[in-house]
Length: 372
Image (cartoon, rainbow, N blue to C red; front, side):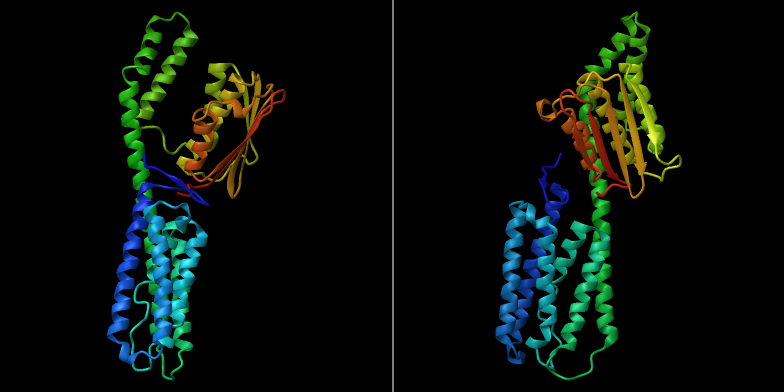
């Protein structure tokens, strides 16, 4: 899977770093053309020093973001960095009229400010891209209004610029979301293929042997159930429309059959809102791991799964065991991979409240639809 880096809001994939490097190249090309035009039209420029200063500010921003993109600095995808770049682009557009005189229609920044719109779309999605584009359209309007020369400015032209900037931002954000989904689907398919190659001659054959040779009917049934679930996962044909209530009750029933842990599933609303299939799968998987830990580490006999769905999915898994020390769990397994990682994949979070001598509570928070 692609290498990742943490930012202030999510995980950045190799694909997104590649897009950031592409936008960096766009900045250099746009900045180079703006410098060439400023030089060629220097006889018609009223504020050369201001123009050079503004392009210098754009150069500093371009150099910093390029270094960050190629060296994978997490701040490149931070909202503060995006806002700072948009501020530079807005300043160039607002002061454009201070650089060129009345008889010249050339824009100082050329297409350079568009890079900020693209980064806003990549980081925040279609809405953020549209808002950034509209904001820079307003900046261009202010630049025309504050120009030191008199003359009529086409309102339709200025409105068109704002609309086109907003459309570009929304389109870039939507395209990025589609690419992310495709990347996730490809990664999942590759992971299934890799796991299938690893497990086919090991775990699946072992489960088949257990079914043939064991005289324990309960063990045979459990081995058969696990074999079917594993084959369905590897084949990618798990049900994708299962309602969250059915998914959690199915998970609870499986844990009861396997471990003997009594599990009660309670919903605040008997008819909860629809939850996207990836979120249902993440919540059900995390709940299954929490119940497994309750039996395995906490020696619990009963557990309650409490679910409240409103603007987000909140799920609490509480048991009557004697607790355990989460810090003592081996890194990279159990709580880390099966709970925190599952929720992080859909933009959610998990909290584990566990102390030796008391029951354990796992609190899960997730959006109704994946944020990525």
